Length: 356
Image (cartoon, rainbow, N blue to C red; front, side):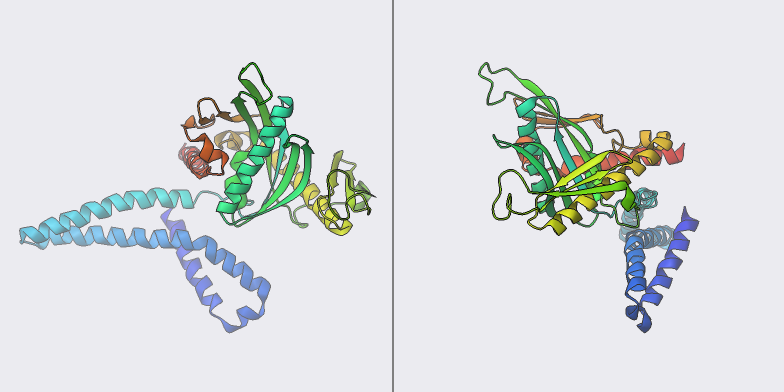
């Protein structure tokens, strides 16, 4: 591990030297690439430098204890020694985590697809609430949210909604949300006051660039039509809606959220790319079954990951047996505590696998 850290330290110093060269700024592509590498290495290098400093502090404190006769100075040296030893342990753990193999998609934006499952109108209402939960969470992170597809029902619910979250590292956090979310509560439409259980599915896909996925024009049929549903200007008056059919997979995408056909077409292709890229990622996950089992619920879409129990005001994440009694705050977008716990559990599982 420490040989690798020394190599990374050397590489970091080379990068800083390259970035200071005057001609680098004239090549935007190279400059971006170097800045990205420098940004990735900075937390590792900073932690390693602090680690080395703490190791030096331990040596200095031990030498001081050997040589010093003044009791007060000895006490200070002991204190410094204990602090440095504790910090070294913390930094060793931190460095192990920082050196874990990184998911290549972690820095990407995400496309999130929420679909109502079992439970009829109640599931559609819950889908709309979970959508709002993610929108509030994204806003708290200053991420941008853009709706791509939406099928609403008259009572404020959503049969399905697809949206993009644009923000640094969005996938690294949001990927843990994929799976089945279950709600337990008394529906407003229920006169008998019985608790119902409904489900929705959430799929989180990394945004795919054109370089990630090649789409053959022969494999696509593009239909344009008038947009339907509630709308303002342009809806129902121009052929702005776009439907894409991808023959090899049977995926059909309908986009009508924008007023212009060109924008709807761009959104439809972005969603198709993400779905095709996601299929490839799922295949890779299946091929690495062991690695997938060591990860915390970033694989199987049919896995029941979380229950939102309204009568008890609690949310339980079944993957890590975490229960929080702050349902109102969570439904309002305060999900960071859950996500942090999932990330920590995922890192712990990966570290354990490396130590086997």
